[in-house]
Image (cartoon, rainbow, N blue to C red; front, side, top):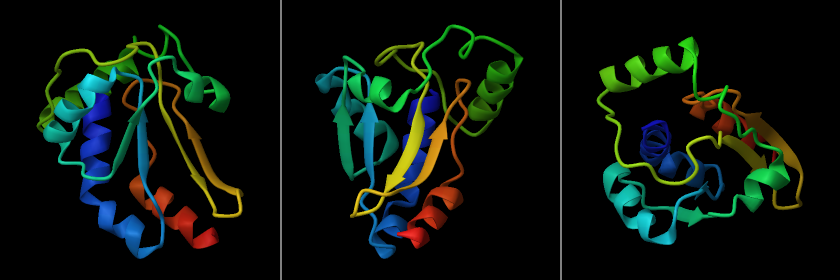
Length: 135
């Protein structure tokens, strides 16, 4: 549910990244055959990749923990997500793997790094877009 919510939000801002000469790529941990349903559910038309072995997540040091997906904050985010129209769907990928976001310039400088500590914790799109101004 949270992944779909984040991808759908990024989909509505896809052109904003292009205006700032940014290329947006989303990496999930599901199987390749799960990408078309995710694309259909979110309306995301950009680069959509999958890493079932979670090598990218490990390289970036992104959290994977049961504590990150259980707790009051997660329940609060779930209620907010459902109230916004997102519903739980079939599990795609590793349920314990938390996400993150990174912006990297063409000359390989990291201008933004966000590491989720709990399920449903996403970086504000405005911060991602602002980080492109540092490129």
